[in-house]
Image (cartoon, rainbow, N blue to C red):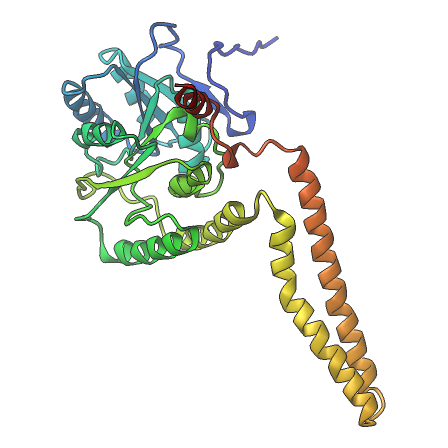
Length: 348
């Protein structure tokens, strides 16, 4: 009878539906590093070795201990084999492997859950981000910021990617109230207690600063280097534009109405309220002016249907309030460590 090989246990808490396999070669319980560098990878076999060399070279200038966490997001090439080989010569390297492609957001969330550092830096694995910019992110964080976002001021991408990105950045900044030049830049630094409270899905990794802003986190943005892609092809197509647009709607609902859903549904019901009043007035006017048979009755039915839509939306809002009452909205509250720091400040 064929037996199933049991995976090694580890500290990683990844949802079973993401099918992540933690790296089995580096499960030592040594002293936790100060900095964790999380890098999602998908079919980047040509970039992995050079990326590790660049991070290690930049790491020689770090004044803190660090670890590198590569998340293989279900690559179809030899990316994972390369990671296993590099592990032998790079003790800082750790890894997570997905059996299927789950997307950049899922990969980042997995890497952040697995990270042991007090500060988490995320970056792309295609060599377009520059690891030597990491010290600048850390230096800015020491000024009291909770998130420092990179800004690809001189971006080296094709105009077909740059222009939609600028439009998206403008929309996100205006709708969320968190103004950044470059939401799409993956090179960002987070305090661990802030990033781990986020419940993310879809393409929401780009919205992490906006979501964390709900806790009152301080956010800064600094210019960083950007390089042209050296190997492979971009994983992003036109379909991503529609995903981003849908996520913009979702993130605004989360930011503005997650803690008060009744208000959100009440706002959504306003057009139906206006329509119901208009149709009801038309029905009354039809009776008064003796319109032809059937017209007033039609307006009454339409008015009732619009009114029922209002009722249904308000019921959904009430149900949302009940759900919020029994839910743990971690993304809208200050992290526990931050609250302890505040209490110490007040007592002193």
